[in-house]
Amino acid sequence: MSFQLRMNQSAKKTGSNIVLALDLPVDQPNRLLSRSIEILEATHPYICAVKINRQLVLPLGLFNGVQKILSSAQDLGLPTIMDCKINDVGHTNRIIAEYYYKAGFDALTANPFVGWEEGLQPVFEVANKMHRGVILLVYMSHKATNEGYGQKIHDPKTSQLKPQYVAFAEKALTWNADGVIVGATYPEKIREVHEILGDRVPIYSPGIGIQGGKVEPVVKAGARYLVVGRTITLAENPAENAKFIRDIVRRCTKE
Image (cartoon, rainbow, N blue to C red; front, side):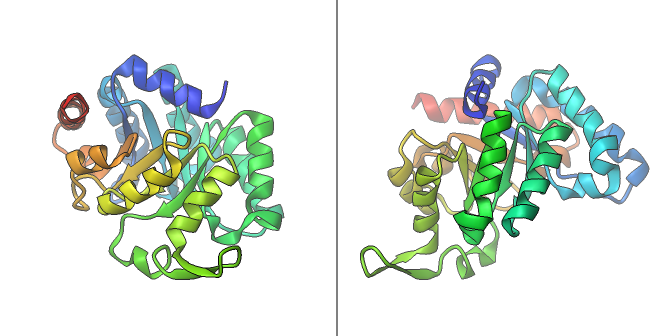
């Protein structure tokens, strides 16, 4: 089963398109694993997938604590995404992808800046072989993202200038990516990317809440999945916040 199909089935089953980003502070390392699982188990009725980044992998270990979180997510029927932003030469990228997939992740994120040949091609080859997903960064959610993803580049086919993120969205189609990342803090970029991708490649949008992203403009611009981290994980009641955001999304999609 493809990663996109697993995501579709999970979203339909839970009635949610919220991807929980388990971005927890490391000020209490001895509670990091238990707190991650607590939040996951409390919020799982209101989310459709789980995203983990190096904030957990580095202190917990890929084949130790992180694998326990992945097992819990699997038991709850939730797909898992490793937000590793692969961005190296091909042979290294291949090994990185193999490790994360073998640990149990269903998909990972990758940076199109390294290109295809001897860049991300090996990652897609591994993903296809193991029936896993690759999600490309197109436009991130932080304030300085325009310095890289928003810069103008020369298109050799048309001899015209175009934004870098537009080129990356086009690569997502060419490379058959399973999704793209476009920050929730830039709904106008979501709309522009959605016009390129249509329904062929889903948009994952991080940055809701603490970073300033708002649910309604993001959903209406074309994001399919909302990646929500600290607004849920740092809340006094994570399940309540997850349900609240899910319900806002439901109202937006019915309007």
